Image (cartoon, rainbow, N blue to C red; front, side, top):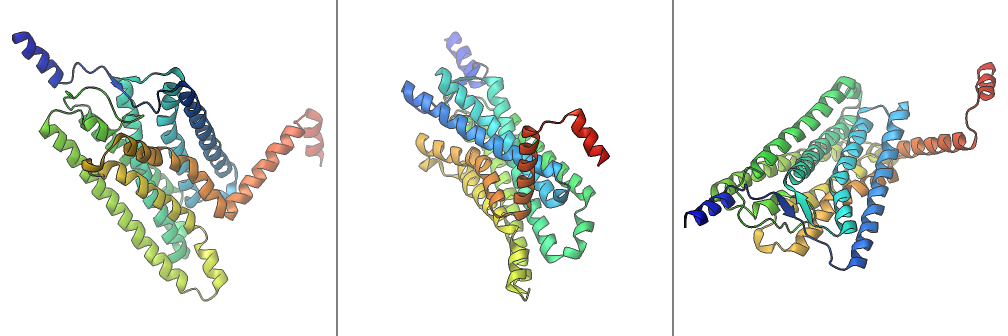
Length: 336
């Protein structure tokens, strides 16, 4: 009887949990390999798209403004976010395994929360950038100079780090006694909460999630109010061409904001009564994989300055690949 009580105490404090079992997409080997190639294609597309945007913004001096600095930061966030979930999922599909270590799960959850929190702050900063550019164009250089960009980056990454530390420390301090199987293809807070056997600790983490949701809602309200002012300013422009030119940079940001809030918020705030493994899988895929892969396409479709920078970058890469630099070429260029 004493041994049974001791074993029960060991399970209640979570010390017996050394690994987690993630959800397998399929048990059929052919479909597992198909999943691997699908995820590999998505990952490579996201790496290529975000990498091209980062390179274009860094090397084109015309794009060294606060708007493109935020876009550069968003691309970095997208690269980190998709690299947190997809490589492990590809490895699980390729090697037909489900187990992930306790420290590995904690690290994955930390990085995921870090990038999601940073994304919310960054989209809010980008809305403010659009507001200043359209509503207060004469003060744009003063309000959003290089120093302001540094402050924005520090706030974005600092807030993300703070929330990641709070949620990760609190989530993995929960005593787990409901097994170690997660109905998800990566480590996620709602899935780990379902394994908890402590009501008070569970409510503490739920309280943190509600607080985070309130802050995210505050960011959403700020974005909406910013665009209300932007719409008013655009409608006061007399010419239709001027209206189109002033508002041309806003639709990509609106699309990214809509994609983020419509996928990330339901993943953490949906009622437990409607939760199911298949629904959780679809929702998590939508907020963790789709935005990083789609955001570069959204921003490159309507932004003419970015298109021009990408075209010049492609021409430069093509020219240097066909005509590699040589000493005689450098000499002739210097003489001319």
